[in-house]
Image (tube, rainbow, N blue to C red):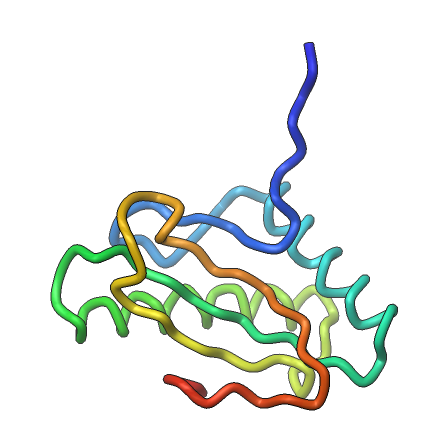
Length: 117
């Protein structure tokens, strides 16, 4: 039996949920962040939170913010320097579970502008 590895640069969330208790996925995300910063010490990491297209824009911004903060806090607790992390929200991104995600993106000397913390 071939076991597929979890995606390294994002985690998904259940509908209307801002907590992900998939420890393996969180560890992969943390290791991915650590590796990106080792490969480029000048890089920063963008925590980009997405939501599905159900509900109002305000509700989706709120859930995006909560998901991004969940990942931000997890990464800081796992040793990623807070000054290397930025948040961005993309509410009403698409349909289904894959739209309800938080993705890490390595940036070089850039600070995001949309819905940022």
